[in-house]
Every structure is written in C-alpha cells, then in structure tokens.
Picture (cartoon, rainbow, N blue to C red):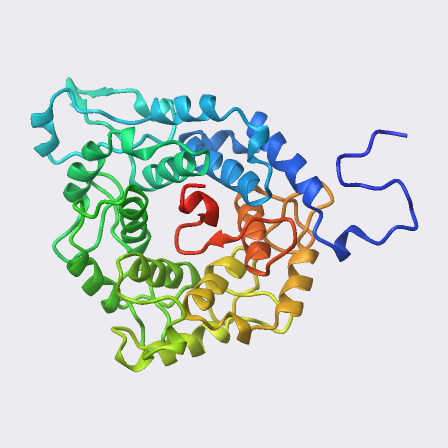
Length: 361
C-alpha cells in the first residue's frame, strides 16, 4: 500500500474527510506548492510573488509558517523591489514598488527606447504582506521610495492604476494602496479623501460596490471598498452596533445585498444569479465581519459547502468536484479562519493576513 499523505487515515471505517477540516493535508498541499509549482502554473510566472503570498500567508493561517526558511523568503522578496537610479527619478512618473517575478525585472528595449520598470501595485501589496507575515522589520525596508512613487499612480478621480502607464483603474488598486500604506504605517503616498470619494461613487443602487462607478455590484469589489474605508479610518469595526446611519456609505443596503449572497447550498456567490464559489466565503464574509454582521449568516451551511470543495489532495477548489488551486485554497483557509476553525490563526480581515502578523507578533 502506498504511503498516505499527512492527515490521512488508512482506516476505512474512519469518518469521511469531507466531514472535517483536514488541516494536516492542507499544510502538506501548501508546502508542496511552495517548493514546486505544477506545470499548469507556468503561465503565471509573472505573478510568482502573488502565488508566494498565497502559500506563505496560507501556511501562517494554518500555523505552519515556521516550517519555511524565513530569511530566504525575505531576501528573495526584497530582491524584487524596484529602485530608481537616483532620488531625482522618484519624480519621473514611475512607480517603484515590487516586481511580480524575476522575469518582469528584465529591462526591455523597443525600437531603441528603454521601457521603464514594470513593478506593480498588487505585487507590492503581496510583497509587503509576505514580509509582515514572516516577521521582517518593515522600518528597515525602503518604504520611502514606495510611498513617494505611489502618488504617481493615483488618478484625479481618486482611483489608482496598478502600474505607471497604460492600465485600468478600479477598486482593486485603491485597496492595494490602502493596505500597503496601512502595513507601512505611513499614508503620505495617497490622498485618502480623494480615494474615499471614489469608493463612495462605486456603491451601486442595490447596496453592493462595483469595481468602477456605475458598474455591477460584485463581492470582490465590495470587499475592496469596505476594507479600504476601514483601513483609511472612515468606518469603524462593528459598524452595526454603532451609528450606522451617520456612515458615509449606505450600510442597510450594503448589509442586505451582502446577506443575500449566501445561497441555498450554504456558499456565497459574487453576484446575483451566479454559482457559489469558495473565494466569496471570504470576500463577502469578510465584509459582513467588518460590518459586525457575521453572526447573521448560516455558519453551519457555509461550513458544509466549503467542505464539499475541500480536496482529497489538500487545498480547496472553486466549486465542488474540481481540482484544488492555490487561489481558492488560500481563501478557503481564510474563510475557515473567519468561522473560527480550531487550530487556525485568526485573520485580520481588512489586510488579508493573520492577525498576529498584522500586529507584528
């Protein structure tokens, strides 16, 4: 008989794996993803830093980050930061954050013209989150370069681009800017009032938030909006227990929209009339936690749905019966942390990292 992966039992009379959260198997899955990515991820090489965030932060939530060589992680992450050749270049309109991978650091020459660095706002969020997670002292990081050049990404309407030119602007990158500023403890790189107005303009008639003003409400966009407002200090924890009527957003409509995203099978959907999906258990569940309304969901039904997406190989899939992937696995672990699964670190919802990492423990 072949050796069983950690967390499995050779006893055929033992309870089905789908009846409980299989922490040991999930740890094994993430360690495997950290060491050697499957060939299907080769097309995601440009996002290697993001994939590392899912693996490292996921292991921390599972209380297993100490199995990693933290100094090696810190050295690798810091090697991906873009630096201007001199301080004067900080005003050249570029963003000097973190590259998503080694290949994106390559300087390109197009028709004799040098193509500037390709550091990315989302990659920078992942880099700073990883550094916080493994206990790196961010005060010794070159945060001044990040924050000064972050201003180059904010647009006149308050939104952010992810790179210095030729990219879309939406709530995802407002969130990245807010999370980076919060983790670095310095808000000099963004105009919070402008960002607040942009977020307010993204709230739809039904209470949810679209990625841009006037677009359809979406679970991920709603998380980005609410988490950003909390990080920037415009809404408080447990908003429903306070004066929600004086809030800058329509909280009753938002609460109604969010609670309606839990479907009959117990899972959460990102939009009306869409299938339930593992990741929205965190995106929408996180919104409800920030609002102080998590107690209104059916936690038992949600847990049962998530267990149908738990893979026998470790990790979580998007939908029941599919193979696991790193993205949905991380948000599956995050959702179980929200459900206060024993053996998991509590998650700091608005930052997407474990609570003890957020406070530097």
